[in-house]
Amino acid sequence: MKNRLIAGVDEVGRGPLVGDVVTAAVILDPARPIAGLADSKTLSEKRRLLLYDEILSKALCWQVGRANPAEIDKLNILHATLLAMTRAVQGLSVQPEHVLVDGNRCPGWGYSSEAVIKGDSLHACISAASIVAKVTRDREMQVLDSQFPEYGFAKHKGYPTAVHLQQLSLLGPTAHHRLSFKPVQMALKQRHGVLNG
Image (cartoon, rainbow, N blue to C red; front, side, top):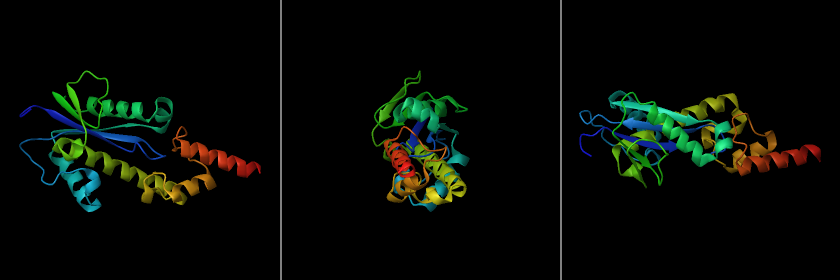
């Protein structure tokens, strides 16, 4: 695969109860290597932010794709994630000759592609995509946190932590919550019971 235009694709945000599922597609420039690329989850926040800036300035091209909570509720999280991946790759300014997708399945698209389990620790282009997706989504959670500070989105990033679940049952879901997710449905039922009790 040497000297071919290879795009790496990864997603962030399948597990949270709130916000978009965010994907990124990145084609790295072999002439401008980036040292220290790794799975975004293994990097410190400081290192991740530095690499994010370097990826955006050195990559041949990159693109973020997403599916919003309404699409997640309609399609389910798996199909919404595949849709977001398709949007990311279709949005690249340079079309790839081959796509490496982190995980165990590729979207049903016309690209030459393969799914790579643990690909974010095996291929630099997927590592780069995981960093771009994670920094993008974390920043969106910080914006949401400023709009709804009582939920603590900046800390838990929308994942179903004890604090998040507690606030969800106290306050109910925001317009950004995924209503098809069981913990959100349970919080709605609890809240409905309390309000009617």
